Amino acid sequence: MATEAADSWRQCFAQWPAEVERRGVLVTSFDEQIPFDSFAASPEMLLVERRAPDTMGARLVMISYHQIQALKIVDVVKMKVFQSLGFVVPPPRK
Image (cartoon, rainbow, N blue to C red):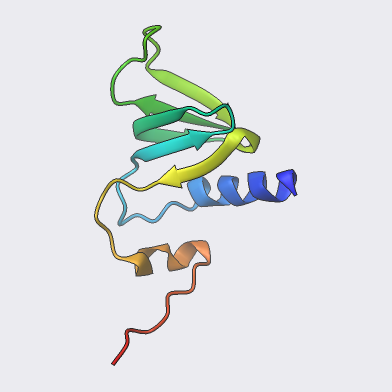
């Protein structure tokens, strides 16, 4: 199960929709929320750039995909842009 979740996060960041800014808030398995303005994806880890340094002065965070619990999108975007990640958006109600 954990490997499947890690693979899903890897795919999400590797195939990030071009219409969406590369920023958000990462929620980790160690109960931290990391606001970021940029990221880079590798096959094993995600590198995020914080908006501001943390209390230790760190601005960049490298995190394993296994440690990602959730991703918060901070920009207003249409849900349909996430169809490229496999999300199915129902048609609008009439």
